[in-house]
Image 1 (cartoon, helix red, strand yellow):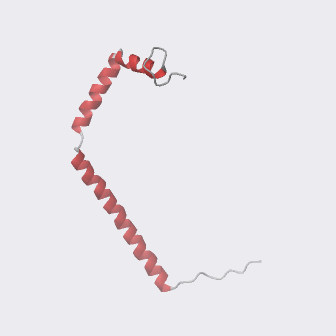
Image 2 (tube, one colour):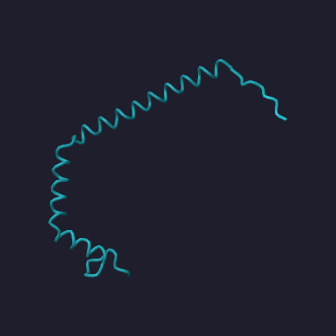
Image 3 (cartoon, rainbow, N blue to C red):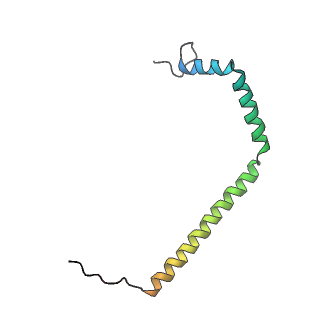
Length: 84
């Protein structure tokens, strides 16, 4: 085994985890990330926005379907072109 996911010194995952534990900036970055997450919208709000986005896309789809139906009903044909 090449040691990329182990818990032994010399393993890539172990070394990366130890580096993070000893890094003051990493700890500060994690604390700032958690603080920013708390400032954002709640999961309930995110669900509402996600649903709204889906509804907007469905509205665009309905408009396109109407337009396609209208053009298809007209029976417009293209202009014949002579090809040599």
